[in-house]
Length: 241
Image 1 (cartoon, rainbow, N blue to C red):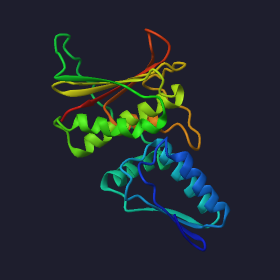
Image 2: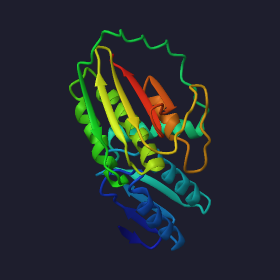
Image 3: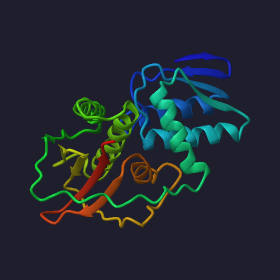
Image 4: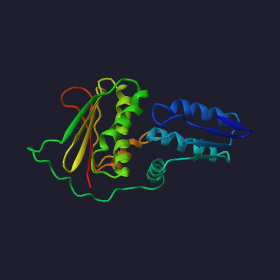
């Protein structure tokens, strides 16, 4: 971090997500309380920003605006810049996705081309590893870079919820690739949560955007209480174009 009177530059060493946001929040709040009015976030090493990171950036940008200050991001990759454009719409506009045709049902005889089951380590600091692991697994599928990024970010949001509600304990990430789609399931052993397809989650200044983002980024989002035990199952479907 560098400071010039009321100007400060922060350079996060990695992704801005549920794991790194608490430290960044403390740094930014200390700068604002100390008189900084222009905060520049250098995103040179930032590959992903999740909904927690987005909420943090928006809330501190608003706080600075209230004291005639400014928070800005520089050196953002094309993928990060595109995500910020999509995510910003959620806060600025009432966004409703276009009516999508129902996803074709899978034939009961169709087997996945491949499947991968990953036991997730407890500790939110591991989230970035799994996010990038999803990207690696998607690289062999006929997807654009944008679609791959969107799918990985949606999976990250599901994992972030599992960490938030169950600390990652008993959490498993399942991925299956079919002829026309990829299916990602995140299961945890938390208290259990369910949300209907037409239901909007409650939102506060720094929470509630993750499910909205998932719905924008992939073709189907289902969130159910687990039937086999306590916990939540989040199922994401991304059609292959």
